[in-house]
Image (cartoon, rainbow, N blue to C red; front, top):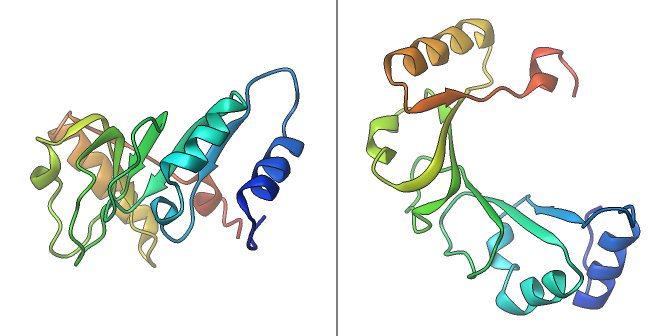
Length: 149
């Protein structure tokens, strides 16, 4: 929902959007969420039974205790978060080779096609890479395939 929130307002807003029938699943994205996701905020969310996930570029270390970490490295940055649940790499990127990430401590390795004018061909390049390198799995953003903005 964007905007600036203090911790109490953020927690109240997030919880107001969730059904009481299941634990809230909070995914922090946009910009670099690890610049705000500190141990205090994480403790507040966990105290309300929230499951907390982040999607990060990996340039900042994650606070201990985040429930799910997705790292999407970008060209020209220093990767500091070298472990987590998912490593998701946009492919192809000049200067980034998926093989340079294969020994990192992630449970899942995903390649996501670069959104470019040749998107259908790029999808096929990713599929071919995944077939040749089975450690990698295909990740698609369906809204792009359906041209939903």
